[in-house]
Image (cartoon, rainbow, N blue to C red; front, side, top):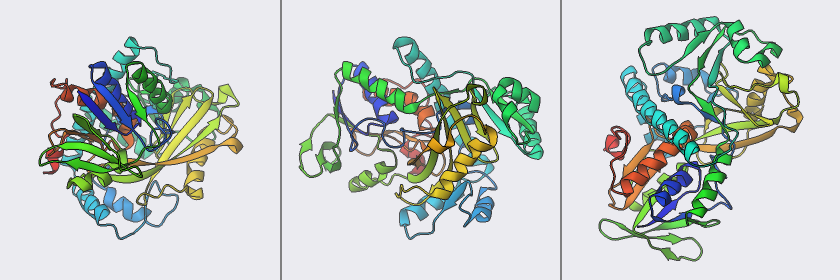
Length: 419
């Protein structure tokens, strides 16, 4: 079949690869000049299967009130009149219960675990080098009470599928010797050894090269204005400026935070809203003082990954609609996280800052599968876990389009949960 994939980020390119491998005629459309130039470009680098949990959780609404107006808070939002945000926000608050947290965590873990298995299989099939590391993720706790609570929760859930090891401060330094250079007090840490890290942009570029070898056509610098439809299906996509219509048998919507804007023209109300995240990339100048394992600073809510001769740190969340301007204060907050833990690791005067929009659903899991239009498939809403879930999500959509049953259950991951 002829398939048009809308979006050339890590999600769209992964989808295109599996579709092409299944024998379909695939075209990928993106408004940027190349692949992975928006949310996939400079994220935190973590493939965080063991950390795949929804943002919505008990206690967060009260915490948001305490953070209100603080520019250095991990979660910051600007009040604005946006009916779509308020509808999303009400659903988000309704998801802040213990039961919904359990449901969302199971769904995210199911998909994330499957996606990592797909990624490992892909690495055995083709040659990929995206600065991948398989040492796991080490989460650092500065606060003793927070660490004790995390350790107690780990013991209480000893029978779960998530494998984690509680470490004291010395154990953290054994796992990551570069922590010996830090000036902060470390209460302890959690090592999830089955997690990975790597450069999502490098992965996307290399996978796009494999796609081209399979005959996939990429149309860059192309903005989709809307769809042509009949009563039950999409007949084509109309391109901005030229008003040209491209036809296909099947269409995949993988535009991240921009998916709901295009879907509105079809009468589809996708509960996906942009949450802005920041990252900083610092060139490493002292190998012994820079981490090799991917890390998370739990108190600051900042993740760090070693990507070749650079250190990438990412964090904070800002709800500001589709504004992608950089906030000096929030950029500095992420950079300070690097300076705190690894003060001699790199040349912070050469730091490169970046921001992009994470496509968040109110309850956590993405939206995968079909829509009310028989030939429109959805692959969007992955939030902060797009890199973690990209490979598996692409494989699932390709299987559905090919008429095959996905290898995992999609219960709770489709639009049906909102209807």
